[in-house]
Image (cartoon, rainbow, N blue to C red; front, side):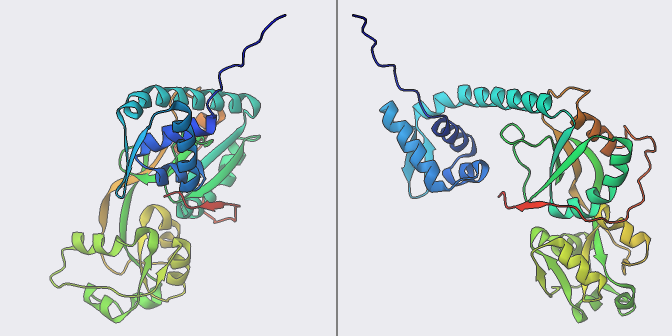
Length: 312
């Protein structure tokens, strides 16, 4: 009679992924954001893994979690393993859908910079399908199914444009603004994603008097831009995004002073992608190196479908 002993129980992949993300990011909440689950679910998965191991991976306290020696010792190997898994999955996606490109970007960049370029991109790359997801923060390309990231960033990838900012408003409102001190007499619009814009511009403008602009706050930059177009107030404009409105005279810069932030509009992808892949070709087109006509296309905004997610 043949005896078949029970096989050792394998650890759940979800628990291993929860451990790796928590250890790499330094906490359960950050791991939950990356994996799209709740911090409670991450905590439960790690507790289950620790129970099966018979040893703790994290030390828990009111201030958060810290890796135990066992957890710290295990992290590098798991990080490398999940990196390799991510690359393998990306290669599988490329083979299954070789002409589909997934781009993750800020909502404002998607609407004001990327969307107007899509008709020209489709015309020069027929058969390529572009999918856009609007995120508040860049995703980890080794852990998510995106091909390209397009964000204002300080160091990643290829710089497409400097982030130059300055006040903008409708022409009728600009007539009332002779000096920056006149900003105290009109509404100054704020966007929650870039709520420090006014402070950055005022600091670089080196004004002789302290100014504290006040006005409505908007959760989307597009809403703030729309109100600026309607004459509701003055907004700090990002030149890379609003250049078409300035060129058409729909928005004007009432003051000469501009501020350049220590970041740029940058495009990047996961390393190791094939130069012949659709994502690489789209990246070359967006950076201007793969276009038939590298000059900026005519920028007529169009409507696109975007999935807006918080990823902080």
